[in-house]
Image (cartoon, rainbow, N blue to C red; front, side, top):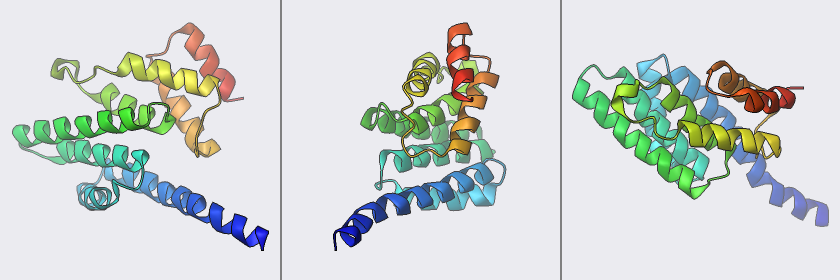
Length: 170
């Protein structure tokens, strides 16, 4: 009976983890495909209340719509809205590695003249700190490795940070 109770307690966590795996996969498809990005936005709008990570992916979905829009006004509107949602998610869960990474990666690709890459240093430092403390949350090894590799290859980490990031890959 106790085993069944423990299994039931763990079930929502495993379902959430599986759901986030699907969200991550759809996010990466949405980056290059407008039709997938539209479906992803609909899904994340519906699912944004599940967790702070889901909220962050909703913000990412909005920024992707900016990427796929052709009208400069729409591009900027989607981008601003998405960045506000990402900041909200970061405030809700300031020690969540995935949320920090998502905001870092979006801001990394934004042109500096937009003035929307205000959290790059803060997020990079937090990412390094969380990796050093091994505070990965529910991230699997492959997802973590891809995140760390991105931060290293972004060229934004300094010597000591690079050492910590590279150590985490061993």
